[in-house]
Image (tube, rainbow, N blue to C red; front, side, top):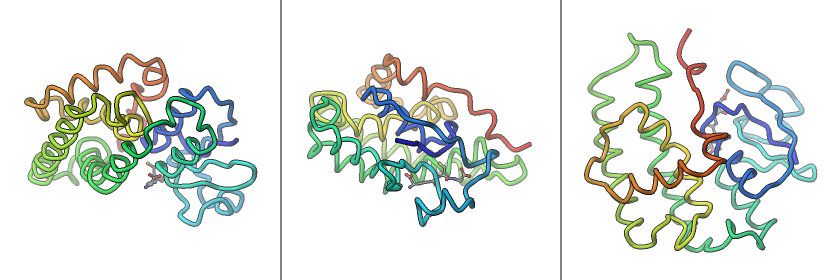
Length: 207
Ligand SMILES: N[C@@H](CCC(=O)N[C@@H](CS)C(=O)NCC(=O)O)C(=O)O
């Protein structure tokens, strides 16, 4: 398998985390961002969207980070990470549709945009939106312990990955969501989180 995508991309990080938990060997092609390469024909042949991550598996390009996680689970049904997909799957959809857009918006406001391009009002509105999203996750965690069910699984990777940067850029978010904070602390204990997720992203700031 070949993973295409720069490790500073939060969506690539989800796949790096999953591959690490599964203990799967892979080649890594660092493309995207400052590394370029997204218009190269070899990359574009694997994905019509031209975004990272892409997992090349037996010559096939699998794209969209959460689809890649499901692909890995289907390939490795014996692994504990692949259990409880019925519980994990709605959360992964929720992650794509509801968590990632305001997270990316706030990350741009706090990190990626030049100071003169930022808007305090927009950042505040995104923080309010994210507080609501996090309270839904807090409620879910109260029901099942992990987002994927009784055990750590794919949804915890998919929605847990942005939590490192989110609480780095907005540490005061969701103070009443104790179960969410406890979950994040449990995620941070995993060696794969420390290897791939809790990493420097200063490279993403404007020059
Ligand atoms: N919904 C897609 C989003 C893919 C995406 O927007 N990837 C970004 C990086 S996070 C990208 O390729 N940006 C262009 C670049 O890195 O040059 C997924 O979950 O994989």
